[in-house]
Length: 235
Image (cartoon, rainbow, N blue to C red):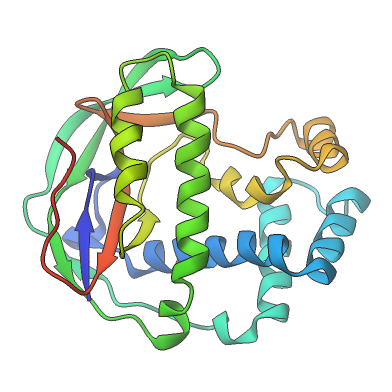
């Protein structure tokens, strides 16, 4: 299997030992599985909704840890997995832009390290089976960001990205692509009014990252896993 960067993958503090951490890949797949299970399993959705509403957590870190625990209880085959780190070439230090999705404008910049390229890797069958969940999750992120940035210079990129997602590949979002990307764990609650209200009131959280990172008119972190030859990047 090959990992193709459609847009650069960013690491604000640098890639540890010049490698793409396997835990980043695993986290991207696990959060996709959580979102998919909330949508498709009514009993699981009721359980996590009840937990969020009851407020048995003190902060956002504890909330996410408890949500992950519930996922692993429901899908024990996803617990205890590990993926190898992937050595990188051509890591470059760059200034990246910070786009605010609510203000629809650039609100600053940050320094980070970017990787673009093609990596060979292997996924265990249990993770390959998450391809539909990963596609749905990536499409949700792309659709939300495209809508938020519809009047900006980034809009044409999202049109190309979403067209690319219609192919036979396995999309993921990796690395430091948003200031508060942990909020993607809350994506399934976006349209559940009472949950969204509790999260806002208790933790001042909304279910979507508020600011995303961009470089050269593309947002960062979009990759595709595929078995075929290298495909084209954004043009």
